[in-house]
Image (tube, rainbow, N blue to C red; front, side, top):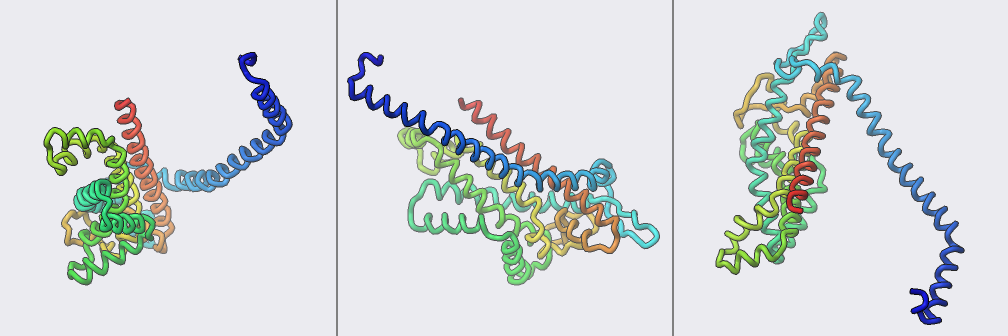
Length: 307
């Protein structure tokens, strides 16, 4: 191969090889330093996370490992029975009801917005895309204040599960819309063009061809939005009342949730309730971890099937 090269090419190659050998030591040193800095950054990020997890498991495992923690209603501790705590069944069901109601509103609307943004490049779509991106980065307490202003005050519904679900739906909506838009945009244009060539209307093509093809990304976005909403405190604490000691699913009743129960327990004067808050926090962390892991496994399996 070298015999076929011209003298100029051979000279250039020799010069490049010489420069590479001259700078090899410096490049290796820079590479080692950058690798060490990356590992140091990972350690800086991982150490606090590990410390938090160790604290959660050491203080909360004794609570989440008992079945009564999930099945009993809460009890008010007294001076003579400080360990009389009961369980979190009302908060557990309350969080589930809040998420279900929020999904009923946020999922179809978010998917519809995402499909619209993916298939239109008009000025209204650009404005809506900017608003969606802004809402993703907005503090969650703003959603609670918005729910309080609209549902509790303007519509006169009052503190209720409906108000909390509305706040969570507003929180979930931009994330679902953003992931849906990205998933729909990743669908090959040939699928859409094939549907239109067969005489299908644009709406039918979107519903029957585009959305099923993008379903993996859409489902993943919905799961991630749910995992974010499950642990939100500020959104629901302002509007659900936080005083429901019984299990309820009615939208207009006072509600309760796991994050608001943590907030109430840490304000208690009894150390036993402080310890129970660690158990609830650990349970929430595990739920969010399971949801995130499920979203990744779902996405990975679907991509493997497509390949």
